[in-house]
Length: 512
Image (cartoon, rainbow, N blue to C red; front, side, top):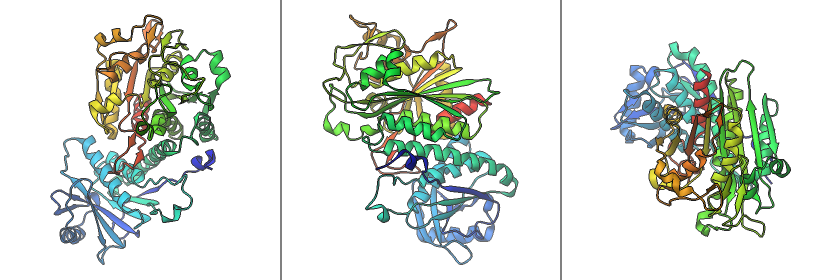
């Protein structure tokens, strides 16, 4: 049985930085970049003419294409200390877009270490980095690409390819000192992403609301993060009708978890609210069986928020960061919420539930109202909210909605760290479809533009404080939070940890 401590003790990649020649560093594999169309090896700051010429000739002989997502592994030449050389494709290098170039390095590093699983446990990465931001991107790619889920494997664990366990990023001498800080930061980012992935990957019989709440408490132990857990009795006293209504069909009761990183000198406060449906059957509005198979992933928003707050504390960011985890299990039973029921929410609103499979917005509504009462400078919710998000934007791009300044700022923060998002509107003409004859609002509206309708519903639960609505953005990660296809770049199969880097960058932007 997997315990909370098993997840707390999750192993992470050891990351280091070196200004030495990559040929002289001992490792199982040397990772170098190849630019499309595959004849140019780019060692960046580690380049010297003899080594570059040798590796370029080897890359051409091995047929390394240079295309993104391509890796060619060959025995190392005699003048390289590593056993293997992994030529990883950089694609067509675009130096005019700093964020895009950093992401191409991140992807190339991740693809290389992912494909080196079972072949190498230590790597040296000599990729074309010319800035601290690019060094950090490479370190992040290495750490995220080396992730391997093992928490619930027993009999087959010894047959799983051993992932890369340590990596050194080669840098120019003038970048070495500053790069050390960047790589240390990358290690915290990687840990947060890997933790979020593991929580999503855990089976729903293990990662129920109580387990996730217990994990939050255990993960914060020894840090200055304060954790408060509200169980059924406390939720009833607070009139959290959304959480209680969604969770009342399960024997595993709902939880609202609040994590607070509040450094003494913080002048700004950001608040993140995460949807945490630990399993979503659809409730009495039952999903088809095939649609339930991945519904352990419906808590990816809460996993991202939890990991972000812990990382903010580890990084000692000079900004207050509060995380709210809205945890419930949505199951059908004799006690489950029925279509047509009216729930009394924490905000005082009443909600007519027309479809019990539109449950995420109900738990988020309670979380948003609670978070907004603290009048943060920014309020962001993140959720695997709608299938309509994937219809609109596919499985790799998240949607960002909300107040335009907040929405655009979150989208820009995502772009800067390589997480794909697209801003979407909240058309006022769709709001009328949420009007109810028997309650203040209903949880379903126009089926066309369902992603936008869900955003409009959530907006109703962003409170006004001192006469002004709290600045708010909503991030729908239904597609990019869970990869049902083949791994690619630094992205594994199943839980991706999407959103952690965006939220952390948002917090860092407010800190500065």
